[in-house]
Length: 571
Image (cartoon, rainbow, N blue to C red; front, side, top):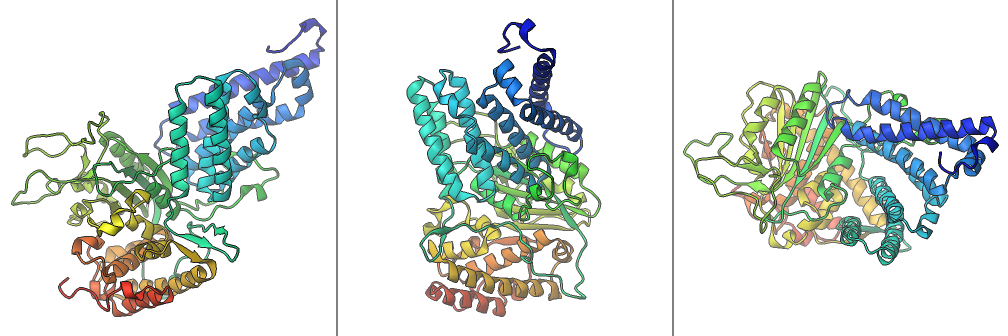
């Protein structure tokens, strides 16, 4: 037992306290390390193990609080060790969020990470000559920053980045370490992430206003009385990011295996978090089985640069566990893979697709190997690879330079399927912004920010922002009516319309399409989003009433000179 003096001098009760603490500490470490061995996919296998881990950490946390004096005197408990326990609990809540997609657990993770900083648990670490302890502190900062990013606490992120920078500088000066470049890269990545939004909103004091883009109460156009739509619910989503530097649509901004486009899409599929601390007796005492009564958000898998095998494994797991009357969403933000040869007959494996990771070292940016022209690219998700999963309702979003590979889907099983497809070519002036994320995904995440970005506006007053947002709410209600009242629209759109997340994505897609069709810089048909099944253009993306709305918004922002009076005659 660490720190014990002559055992004979220690009262039996205090000795038992130290023994019990050591048992709980060892047990908690053992369970925590075992989390790595749990399968990343599947909803059920991990829950009981997580429950046991939460239980032991809750006991450990309460135990050290109740017996702090004895543990200080007899065990030699240091403040950084308490910080380590709090940090592990924060990690547990964060991973519980990743497993369940319940944003409320982010607040729980935040409360523990925040307490570590407020109580200076890691303060003494800098005085000890143990580099491994300093690394624990640096990792804590990195994890805290991820949680703050996900909670849109951008002001705090900037403070934490400054503190982390100072800690890294101190660490690299004191210890001649080999990981200096890695930690500096972490700083660069998070700094780029914070600066990724192309538009900032300013209040009257010229301070930046943080806007949330998660689904809020009243943020979706309601279903009208008598509106006949499907009863399907979005239950599962795969969010995949694999853009490489060889693609014109590269996305360099990433942090913690999360690209900016993945980050935006995951928020577009979540409701505003509720702080569970208000529902329980104490912050940080929530058990996994005390989760909210009904799932607020679809469950998500975040896959950064997956191989084909990994992607297919997660797809299969989601498909297998998809409940009845539910939808699987697949979001692909990836470099395009183009066919090596043109065939007379173009089947689902003849048009290319999007890149999957090869698990091989990239040589000079080249990941696609030279091969026999008759063969298909194996490190690619072809449209045909998704066919088995169309046995259940499937909603696909493809943001890629070869997104149109997915526009000629075949509906083999009669289940609803919709694919929303990004432009494949952007005007040169827009390509310069691609490292800060895709314009198409930006429209799906924050349509007003997408509109401002395409108009070259980088800042806006809060009053005008709120006025434009209010106007867009009216526009979105009108777009909803265009979709549901069209007599020729494919029924798949209506079957998905009952789900709030999918409804908003479809409405934002129509708004994005209408905006780009009217913008003077977007003159090629390849620069317009497409969909499968095709939307009836006169009823939706080229509807005259919607075009009028786009012009009204442009006039409100004083950028009407960037838009044409009508759409292309020949398209």
